[in-house]
Length: 141
Image (cartoon, rainbow, N blue to C red):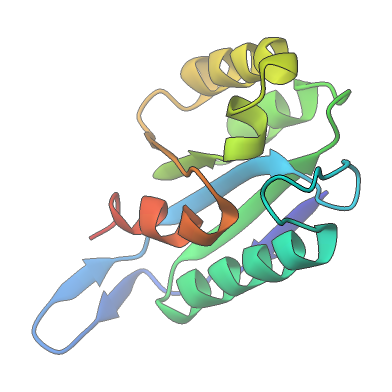
């Protein structure tokens, strides 16, 4: 599933600075296609709402945001195709993909596709859905 937000501005004028609009890709699990354990207090609805808030905030800042949301058994081929068609300045690989040992092979595949298709993009990582915005902002400010 792809979500695309804000595609027209090239610069953002703030109080005393001009920030270039960044193209951001968020790679993560579709929260409605995975099972959440009780240990972190996450639900599909809370993760989905947090993801929407992150996209909305980045869009409000004038950035272009796309999300590539997958299930644990998804192929990385669509990601490769996306990276062949579009360039991104920042790519966030979400904690759910990186953080659990059972997803190591998928994480490796995603990282290799990103390395081959978007080697100039800054990579960032969050440790929880609530700090995804912070992780991305480290690379665009």
